[in-house]
Amino acid sequence: MSKIRWGIIGCGDVTEVKSGPGFQKADRSELLAVMRRNGSLAEDYARRHRVPKWYDDADALIHDLEVDAVYIATPPSTHMEYTLRCAQAGKPVYVEKPMAMNEAECIAMLQACEEAKVPLFVAYYRRALPRFIQIKQWVENGAIGEIRHVNVIHYSPPARDELAGKGSWRVKPDISGGGKFMDVGSHTLDILDYILGPIVSAAGTAANQSGLYATDDIVSAQFIFDSGAHGTGVWCFSAYEQYEMNEIVGSKGKIRFSTFGTEPVLLALETGATDEFRFEPPQHIQQPLIQTIVDELTSRGVCPSTGASAARTSRVMNQIRNGY
Image 1: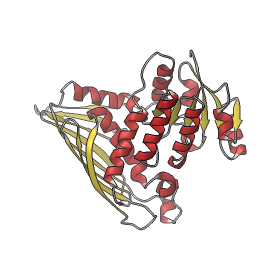
Image 2: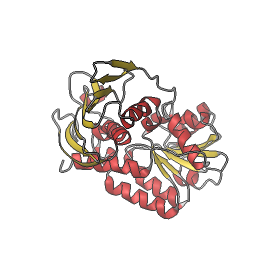
Image 3: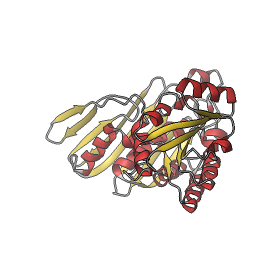
Image 4: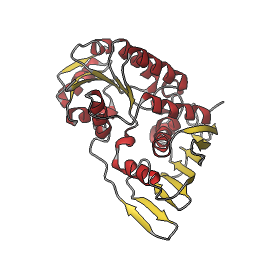
């Protein structure tokens, strides 16, 4: 194919700026159709974003002969269902993160796409951002020596709607598969997989300290990478303020960076030398990853975020939250 015509299932908030316009602005890419169960909202989105077609039925979009590939931007509870439908229709799939409710669903999605011989990509878009590509290059080039340890700290206060007892789908386990850890913790664990290689074992403890909703609001973890490097992490979503930072410690230095913020990346070496590097995020944060998907589908490149890599992240999260 010389050009990829996209359809979106679930044109909600994430598609307004983060992803939707990226399909229109990427090279050799076009956003042809959108779907939302509320037809008036789908029509409104199509009008505002100048998308030619809109649907209120997912199967109608999936089986539209002009749609080449489908982006699934719904909450995790429907990721597997829609992915299986797309695979049956022979359409490549790009699905939001986390990939599914649990590892078992990820495996089912992978198998369905493999049997249908269609590619499966997942929206861990940081894998295509210069900030994280540079960190990966430093690690692979030995800038901080052999990797010894990784430390993740992420805490934030409850959202207003959670304090009012009206939390979003992200804290409803029947929709999200867990709590906020599943939503935001997945990004950090996936980017560590990208930078350092797979996590081969993980364990942890999850609990609900605030009682504001029905699933965990704190998770602590220990994990080991295939390289032998160790890692620890704490994610707490009922703290007094917002803070999030990661450190990769090596035998010759360390790299300090935020997964979500725009703070400069710190490179500190055993010689005492330090340097800070600032990377500005793109306007449409998913566009660079969307471009890699289009490039792969048009035989011009390779996408770094696949169903296989995303399933590893889901497996690790399941191991960390095991028993909760």
